[in-house]
Image (tube, rainbow, N blue to C red):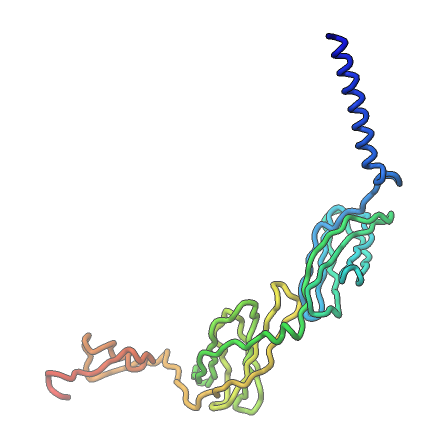
Length: 280
């Protein structure tokens, strides 16, 4: 019985040695020239969109020996080698990529250290924008145009519908009473633009600004468009400080009371007594 155990043990050892030799054969091609030393990979990257350009942003972590960031695109037909000397902690670089055709790109990035070692590849994506994107943009829609008076100053007021996504500001260009031209700006969350000293009955123009992506480095503006309606020739005085001082009579059943006459709300009303009593 012991003899059988010895025979099994011998076969097991021989099989294990053979397996190890086969395992080493697999790796011989990879280590025949010695071990491979890699430069540290970039910690993270991003490509920020612009108009026929992009901003390449790259972060390093504990990579003081790195001496260049090697960037390739268009199937590695185009490249940019940027010299760097990152610190021993967290560090970053920004590199502008100009003259980029309007399209989507795939980028391959690696580093080279001071000894000539290359890092493993990092792949990321980015977009450049131009005329095709510009052609998709539209002005913010106008809801209402009016003239208002406040503190003795006549102002044109342009009220917009809600702004759409990635719209960053809107402008109105108009003529003032002295003949000069002025431009006023509103943010997307603002629904109104006031145009101080706007000329009554005059025309005006609008345009809108967009970014193609969040954090984009360039904005795109629509062309100036003349509004289909002018500022009106009539306007309402500011009645916020007005008060009705006296009336002939006032009762609770007579509508909103005497101040309803000047509250600017066509849905409210007031009238004097019309039934019963002595006619004043």
